[in-house]
Length: 128
Image (cartoon, rainbow, N blue to C red; front, side):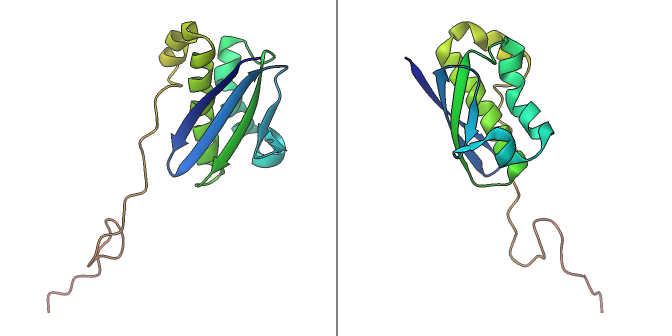
């Protein structure tokens, strides 16, 4: 039985994804996907690459996610699953690329600057 490994990232979340040939079970941090994420929309987001390729019942996913919030973790998991699927079968690459599942979302929180209230917001200016 082959095992494929890939890493997905989004914002500050990191997902380590292991893909096995199996029956379509997805476990995240040793819990079922809905028990961990709680929202059906996040589960749908995670399943999108597998549903696109019609391999939902061919592979099992075991993932460890850390950092960020639930939405960022789901995005990281989606990228990790997509990358692992490519390792399983190189022919999947074009279809995943066309649907945008291989693009890492680069948006991160901008750091707070010194002498300011936040990243962009300034303290109130007083002329006199």
